[in-house]
Figure (cartoon, rainbow, N blue to C red):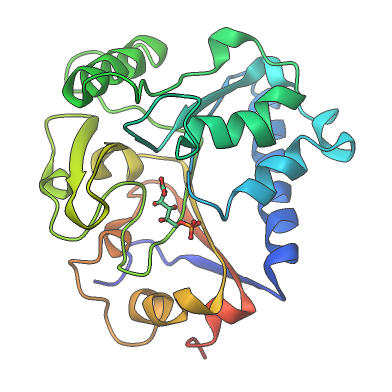
Length: 249
Ligand code: 6PG
């Protein structure tokens, strides 16, 4: 499936160059939101790749350029574990960023991974409706959604073959990932594709095959969840390092 919106593909020399590129986009989008005196709502990706970005945003050179009072952090997905668990996406972001900046606690919208998954999903959906002041049936429009890419084409916690991929009545879904023997919480594609800006951060040679499948010349198989990310009224950017992009001309 070709993206409806032609994605911008930014190929960085290496993983160390990827975070600064993504950080520049974050700072620019946050500044634009500040000019409009609006909140800057961001759904963060989990996994290991974005950690360098989060650390960079917390570094003195950048953190003082961002008005954290306007930033609202959400998560694109979460593992169903306690917030202090080594697998927790919240914990990763807290260690890399939240523990190093002055941001109002009410601006941190954590998925309750420690709760029963369906309850956590339902509560998070309520949190989205409350924060975005949504009427029934409306979908939140995030300023920015950050995503990663798994070698199987998953993104957030939307895995190939998951029923969550076809969820259109909810903003947040649960998923049991057989190969990981783990429950997950995830934003649904309805929410991801409603965003103003969606940015993938993909690094490493292990991702080159799936990147080629999704961004290469031949149409991606539609059952790759990441291939179904097409923000209808937004922009899509892929930040890749050279090893991840070797399959692209
Ligand atoms: C998660 C992520 C997941 C991740 C990809 C890539 O909770 O793990 O949301 O979708 O982004 O698996 O992970 P890496 O960045 O560690 O390769």
